[in-house]
View 1 (tube, rainbow, N blue to C red):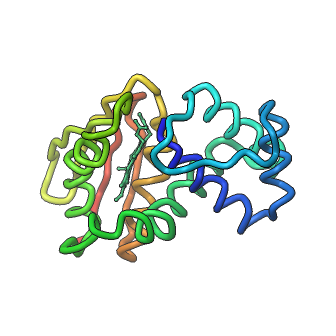
View 2: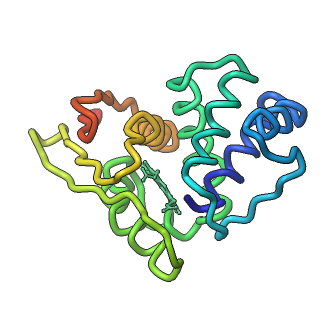
Length: 174
Ligand code: HEM
């Protein structure tokens, strides 16, 4: 997975729980506490999962809480700073979520070994969308945290429900 994900996790843990908690998370994951991540480097998926597991222990939060915190931070703090251009011209959760498939395709196009998640969209009604999640990583809970983060970004009250390990339902406000 791209180092951007780990860098964002680090920023989040440092600002919410303190520097020492991040260092402890890295050490618990079997890494040096001074490990530095750049956005475009590749980090083994296993390592990323290990870091997430460790920081749940260190910060005493559940995986679902970690997914929500990550989703909120990625969409509201990290991505607007690092990937600002993708937010230009989008004015609602619906618009941004519909752009997510092509954004992931674009942002990783020129990066060797990237395996971005891909999405398909299906409408059940004018305000009810199903997101089909296509990835071998099985991170639907993180996807859910990210979708909720998009709702926060646009100050829209989204109802997000997990239908299965690869489908989420999102109801947009009227
Ligand atoms: C402008 C905003 C965003 C950018 C630039 C972005 C970019 C990325 C990048 C570079 C990765 C790593 C891919 C890899 O290493 O192969 C990633 C992972 C991921 N992104 Fe985004 N992302 C954004 C917003 C979102 C949002 C809003 C969602 C939810 C709809 C989302 C869902 C995911 C998921 C679930 C993963 C984990 C990888 C997987 O499941 O396979 N992202 N994203």
